[in-house]
Length: 410
Image (cartoon, rainbow, N blue to C red):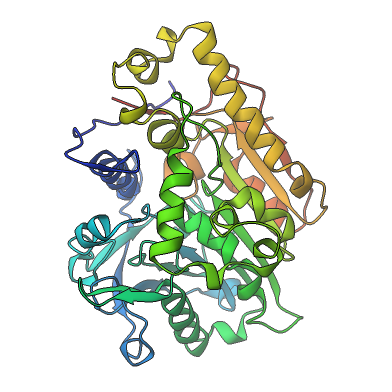
């Protein structure tokens, strides 16, 4: 029986640009529960937090001025000189108010970060859970800036530090010193806002290494689309405009994009992925659960609850509502069309209502994990990274896929 991930929402107390922050925080907190151990499996690997002690002198600090951090579990055997760097996700903050709130959470301050976390999915150290990367050096870089590791600036009056780009650089400098400079192969990955960050920083990551190092990038649930919500508004574009403007992101966006488009457009992956030179793999649910809830059908765009029954149980959707979801999927496929034509790139776009499938063990690699054409996510990513076979997996439209582990919105 396919496991269904049931998500109970906390009603939003306030919202910004249509993004309901408490609902979003509830959703993101739920996704952090990839730490749960599957029935019958052995105890999960627990990895302590390391703060980057030299970061403050570089101005590389979290929103509240505290030190950024990461979790590192050393590789062994044949993987001793291979590295997976996973950039944590967790939304964005686009106003002074939302960034001040974020300072009181682990997504804006290392004071509130867990002192240790579980490594599952692509970060697992067990071959039976993570067949291709289990013995690599595996790192989770904590996310505490609110602009996908891309901001540069500060707000003195509210003691806010927008230093995402500096955090990225400080983390990479520290990890290079800890042995990553000797890597013979490296994968930059990330989930959600971290998946967007892996796209933004992919070529920078490649440039850290000599040409002889095999370097690729994975973006999981990072394909956020510039699209309209059910009321015809642009929820995510409005939010991204605030992020880019407030946090000084423009100067760190790729010039290949900003020379042709406005800065906000250049924070959307659809305008970035085709210009990334480093081999990249896009892992995304065609009906991304976060985008459905926060971008397509945010509460402010559905004040009379006309979409509520459909959003919580798709058997209650009428034909026009189902078509709205199919149109979103078609926009996603169009967004990656040019990207997918490159032989070096990979795709796994399954027709699920999910979000972040590389971090959770049940979606990454288990007997009932999601599949396209009888091939799961972990094997698909491994086949692509090691050039065993080309992977351009695009699922048939909803509701054909019976292997999904859907997030059920409440």
